[in-house]
Length: 469
Ligand code: ARG
Image (cartoon, rainbow, N blue to C red; front, side):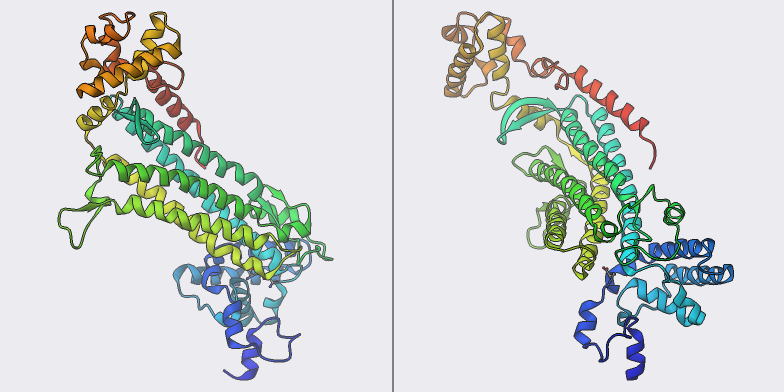
C-alpha cells in the first residue's frame, strides 16, 4: 500500500500530518468486535439518510442512492462477503468508506449532521434492545420449564437446608418454585431496563447538537425508539443502559450459579439426589467411573466473566469527564460476551432440568434424617400448652436421647418421650410423620401440598398473562 493510500484509510487524516504508528492503528481499532453491530449501524444510517431527505438537507435522489448503497452493503454483511478492514478502525468507518468507494462523493454526505459519537450510542442501544428482548424470552421459557417440573414432581419430598444442615423437609416443587421467583424478578429487571434503554441518542451530534434542521423525533420513530434523549451531552456520554444490562445479567447469573451449585452437590455420591443426563455431563479421561457435572460447573464459572464485565465497565466510566471519551470503546466486548454467555446458560439449564433423573427414595430418606421433624415436635408441645421456648428445650433433650440410641425421634417409645415431658401423648407419632410434617406448613407460600399447588397456579396465570416480547 502506498503512503497516500494509507493516509486515505484514516477518514480523519486531514488534520494529521504524519502516518499513524502500526501498533497504534491496531490498538485503536474496534472492528474485530464492533462489526457485530453492523446490522444496527446500517439501520441507523438508513434512518438518518431518510430523515436528511425529508428535511430537505439531501435531495431525494441522493437519499435514494445512499439507501440503495446501504442495503447492498447490508446484504453483503449478512452473506458474510463484506470485507472488513482494520485500517478503517471501526464498523462505522468501514461501512461509510465502502459506501463512498461505490457512490463517490455522495457517500461522504451521509455523515452530515451526525457524529460517530451519536452513531455508536444508537447502534449499541439498538443491538442491546434486541438482546434484552431475547433474554426476556429465554427467561420466560426457563420459568415455564420450572413450573412444569414443579407440577410433575409435586409429591417428591427432599430435605430443606439452612447452613447446608438438614432443617425441615420441603417439596422438591417448592424448591424449584423458589428459582421461578428469582427468575421472575430477573425478567422484570430486564423488562424495566427497556424504559431507559429504548431512547434515541441519534442527532445529538458529536456532543452539542447540530446546526442543520434535523428531525430527531423522526429518526427515533424510524428506528422504533420510544423516546428521544433530551440532552445531547448526556446522549453521547451515557452508558447506563449497558451497565443496567450487565447488572441484570450479573444478578441472573448469580441465581443460575446457585442452582448449578445445588445440582453439583445433589449429583455427588454423598447426596445422590439426582443423576445428570448424559447429554449434559462428561467423563474423566483417567478415572473410568466418573461422570462429571461440567455443564453446571461451567455455568457457575462463567458467572465470573459476567460480573467481570460489570466491574470493568463501571470502572471505565467512573472517571470520565463529559462527553464522549475513547475509553468508552471498551464498553462493547464485555457486554457482547455477557449477553452471549447469559443466553447460552439459560438455554442449557432449560434443556438440562427436564432431563434430570430424580432419586426420590434417597431424597425422601434424607428428608427424614437429621431430626428434620424436631420443629414439629416443638409445635406439637406448644399446642399442648407449653410456651415455645420450653417446648424447644424439651425437644432438644429428646434429640439428645434419640441421638444416644442412634434413633430418629419417632423411634423413641412413648414412655421414653414422656420421661422427658408429660405433655406428650400417643397422638405425637402422627405429628412426626414426614408427609404430615410437610403438609403442616400451610401458611401462605409454605411447603404444604395445597400451598405449592397454589404457587403453581399463580405462576401459570402470570406466565399466561405475559405478552410475547
Ligand atoms: N469505535 C468508537 C467506539 O466504539 C466509535 C466512536 C468513536 N468516536 C470518536 N470520536 N473517536 O466508541
